[in-house]
Length: 528
Image 1 (cartoon, rainbow, N blue to C red):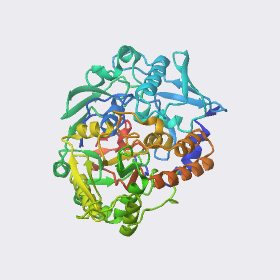
Image 2 (image 1 turned 90 degrees about the vertical axis):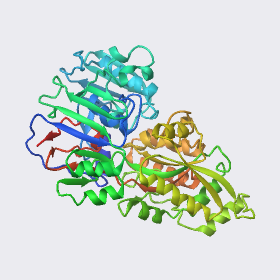
Image 3 (image 1 turned 180 degrees about the horizontal axis):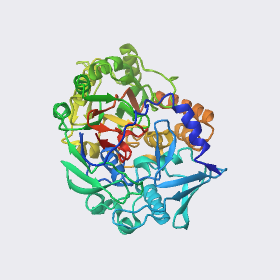
Image 4 (image 1 turned 30 degrees about the horizontal axis):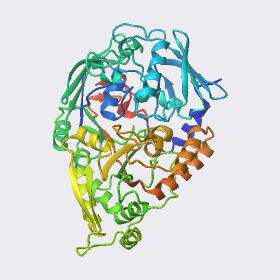
C-alpha cells in the first residue's frame, strides 16, 4: 500500500515550480468576527456534488467538507479523512474517516455517506472523467471506505479534494432526484466548517460557525457573508472603504490597477494553480461553416492575440497556446501558435470555398459573450472588428444574464462564443471534458459544448488518463495538445490573470495557502 500516494508526491515535484503560491507568514489566530466576501455572482445552489463552477464551489466548500485538502505545494493533506492509502496496483483507495465528524444536524459522518457521495458525484457531476474509473465503494465498517477502480487513476486524490469531492449526507439526499432537492440551497445539512444561516437568491449568503466541526477550535470566524457585487466600480469602492474584506477571481485590469495602490489591500495571484483558467473563442463545430477546420484555423490567424491581451488586460495576463494552462506540469509549447497572419487566414477561407461577395463579405455569423463586465464586451467588439478584415460579418449577441448565456451555450444554440474554462488541477478532470466526444451532452455547461469529435484525440486522452508514469503522461498530453490546436475547436487567447484581493489589516491567514485558494475551506481564516 502507498500511504498518501507516491503518485501525488511525483506530481508535486513537477508542479512546485509552476505553482504561484508561497504560504503566508502565520500569525496567532483568534476567534470571532465576520468576513465579508464580495463576488460577481451568487449561485442558485451550493451543492458541489452535482455542479461545477466557483459560484457554487466557493460557498460549497465552506458548507461541505471533502475527504482531502491540498497545501500550496500540491501535497494532499488529511481533512475529513484522517488517513488514506492507495494499493500497489493502483486499483483501490482505502479511506479512514475521523471518529468525531458530524453533519450539521448532529448525525455522524460514516463510510456510507462517503460511498453515497462518490456515487452521486459520478452520476450527476458534469466532470464525468473525475470518477469514471470508480466501479464501486465498499464500507467494511462505519469509518472505512474502500474506493475500487477499474484502472489506475492518476487524479484520484485531486478528485477527493476541495469542491470536487465533498461529502454529503445520505439521509438528506438519498431519496428522489437530487438535482431537484430544495436542500441544495435552503436548510442545507453540510459537513463543513460553516452552516447556512440565510440565503437570498441573487443577493447574499450568510453562513455561521459550526460549533461541532471535526477540527478542534475551528473555524475561527463566527460568520461569513457572501455578497453579490457584479459591477467592478462597486467592488473597488467596497474594498477601498473597508466595507468588504475580500474578493476573488479578480481579473479586471481597471480593478487591479487601482486597488494595488491601496496600502491596506493585498493583491495576489496565489491560490489559483489548480484552477488553471483559460480564456478562448469557441466554435460550434456541428454548424456550418465551422464544421470545416480550415475556417476555424483562418479565424485563429485573423485574431491578433497579443493586441487583445494588451488592450483587455493591461499587461496582467499571459498568452495561452493550447488546452492546458501554461502553469501546469503537463503544458507543452510545441503547438501551432496561430501568429497573426491575415493573408494566410484569407487563403484558408478561399480554400474552404468561402469567397467574398461584392461587399467583401464571405459569410455572416454570430458571437455570444458572457454578460456583465466591460472586458467581455470589449473582447467581443475587438473580435468583431478583426474578423471583418477577412470578410466575416459578425453580429454580437449579449445574453440577458449569466444563466441565459449558460443555457444558450450548453444547449448548443450558438455559432461562436467567448468563454473562460478551468483545467481543475489535472487534465483528466478539467481538460478531457472539453474535447472528449462522449462528453457531448446538451444542457451541460463547460463541457464539449463545441460538439468536437476526433477519434485520435479521444484515444490519446484515454491513454493519458490511465498512465501513472509522469514522463509518459507528459508525452501523451504533448501529443494531445498539438492535435487539438491543429483541429482548432477553440482559439486560445490568454490565461486569466486571477487575483485574490484582501484587507491585510483585518484578514488573517487569507485563503491563498492552497492550490484551490478560495475554493477551499476557510476554517483557518480569522479577523485580526
